[in-house]
Image (tube, rainbow, N blue to C red; front, side):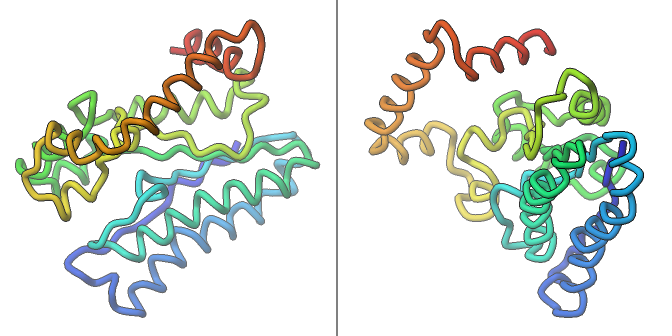
Length: 220
């Protein structure tokens, strides 16, 4: 098992400097590829697996950290590319994309205002724990995930699913959840379409969606 967890992030606008930008990309993305390439022969012998640590910024960007955002978007795509390339050797490649997590670094750099903003934007209204991220990694490394390949699993309390993300924190100021819902009210027809589609999938007697839902419930 290979878990690629090394990474870095620079604050105070440093990532807009080309040299700093290149440094972050080299550590977070190129460094990950180097490690995967180095471990590939041994993983092929054992039919092992790789789990890359991505980020919620693999799904949307941040105007504060362009290099980190770019690198984590690259991690998501690298995961898919290697999942395809390494599959013939029996190597599964997946990623975990954590949301805000109560780590020592987060406790140092996240002010009370930042934490309150995240709590307001995350449907579960709390930070995750390192143990919860580790559990997701453990699942992807286990036999229970033997048919899971090329996936980027968000472990974020619903942050990405809420369609709020960093845009709310960086652009929308103090807009409330209710205001945000009203803003997207014009897409009610689209939402209704997907609601009907989900109901159809769930009611199917057989199919991948129903099977995966069952596995998810058993795991949780």
